[in-house]
Length: 193
Image (cartoon, rainbow, N blue to C red; front, top):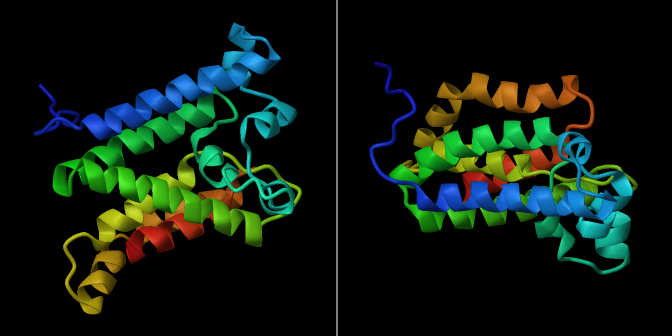
């Protein structure tokens, strides 16, 4: 029997984050009329703006800084939240086993906000940015740095994970509507944490 998905310790913070993202996804679909189609397709762009999507003109032009966090918690469709949830379950669970739940929560929030900042300042000011992937990539950066005690150890850990990093960031150039600035901000802030 395969045991690849069994954890040696419970990961309550990761499961709470996953549950919270799922609930917020359903709630974000309500303004357009909750239906099976809206749950599959996700909220429209105007609905995402209404519930907290991030864009430079909204976040900084209107001084709605709360969008830096809320955008991290929103998703644009079922496939979007599914992919981010699978990545969060994997990376958050690993990190929670190694470093603890408080560190997962801190890393998720901080790297999500930094990813949103990078997206707002360096991305297209008119594009609405949403999704937990900046925070998830931030967790990956945090995992790479956990336990390193010197710059040499950190660089060695990053070298060992170079293919994962290339895949995480490279897919953003291949798949349309992926916010690479949020990913770059997330991974750099995760490593810095």
